[in-house]
Image (cartoon, rainbow, N blue to C red; front, side):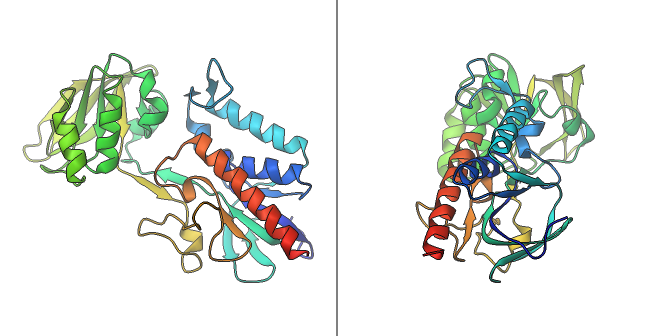
Length: 313
């Protein structure tokens, strides 16, 4: 149970790469940080299989193992973890007040590292094969699909960007879109249409992911105009219909863009509220990588440390 009478130096919301890196730097600065883990400790990497693009792992590392090692590292320096969610934040109170599953926590600074969630289609088979042929991140997983056909679902800039990227590896990229025209910007459309490896499948939705064991073998597609289905051979299916930052908690308290990504001051982790900082995918709609999230966590911890130094004179 959180202590109502105690005021923490640093509380970190989120326990993915951004939150844990912020905790590491805060703990080593003797700020005794508290990490509120959320209901999915470790963030998105806990549902990822092999990670090959995080520095320091020659042979790659499993996502859950990476997060377990990061957590053990920050615990070594005295970081305290509180399991559960935060239901209310009062950012303009002094000290900042959070209402959690384990009572109230008050703090001088808050680092928001609640991440973002990939929008998915909600198919049971999509969930079944997530991390085993189904992915929501081409940059993370594209290299696993060398010389095999893949499917990308979506019609916006994200989908076309992922499709173009995947042509570096895949033998063929089928872009499946439910309409007969794209939402993406003209420059992205032109680039994709010029790419000989990309084939468009219009007026079509992904109905089911088909596989054997833990391997995807086909995408069951349905044409929404004539209702005909097609089992398209492929080994990878990328869902590229966007991400939703986990920022519902901060609506009305912090500036955010139309999608919900939190604003930060240029080249810093500062928000418009003194003592409140952001890190990782919650403020990053462009890169969305574990390594960039970790870097932003470092920035947030250093900004919080400097803020506390100035606060205490």
